[in-house]
Length: 355
Image (tube, rainbow, N blue to C red; front, side, top):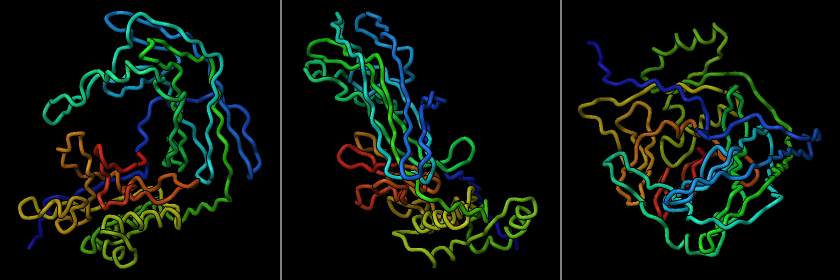
């Protein structure tokens, strides 16, 4: 009697932290130190005068900028996003941006506000309307010249690196005075130290599947080994018995992290799917689908600001292995606020996800 499997999902997760960011460019990188105890990277930027299109509102742009500060209802101002790559063994990263040649000028029209968000599920506009307190304030928006984020993932060559994403705001606005403050130059300085690295290269591919699929997958493992892609098969039962975690998806994610560090794994093949379209329950709790799946799935709890989006399945959870915290890459559990709800996003409580 043939056993029918209604859904088998083969997901190739390339262990990347989902870095979908504007402005990845080759910069004019200055001196890079060669001492392992202290490294420095610097980058200098020149900005032209902003272009102002005055209609009902003033629209501000700048040639060197590749994005905008687009917080709904806040002034829509240009920004430059620069992404720097550091070695995975970089530690204690510090980022500073200094600006020079600032000028202040009055403009006749208010700066146009960033548009509201349109929710795709029902077409409803969310967070619409100009934020009047920002336009009446005598404080500068944004409050500083730059911001940055440090993340971990794979670059375009499949190398695991640390990304330093720097957001520079060369145009700032004082709504109450209707003034622009503009920078002519900016210098980015990144300092870090390198830890001695040990890069294992025993396996490239990790296959994770339930025990009942093991024999069927063995020829695939042998084939990968024969063509020069060393492969390792681990069953979910083996993982559950060997790793601790708050639930089954977290145990699998710890196993992936261990495989990266012990064997140098670069690719993950998850072999599973929903056990039945008819009787299987796709979601056991707010965080996961477990009993109805051959390989458990993680659900995000990505709430819109009105809190009515139920979240969705995300294989990115298994790919987003690391985050940068306390000066080094650490396991990213997707529960940064520690309340037991994974991948949460809402006004009062949200998780910081390194994607």
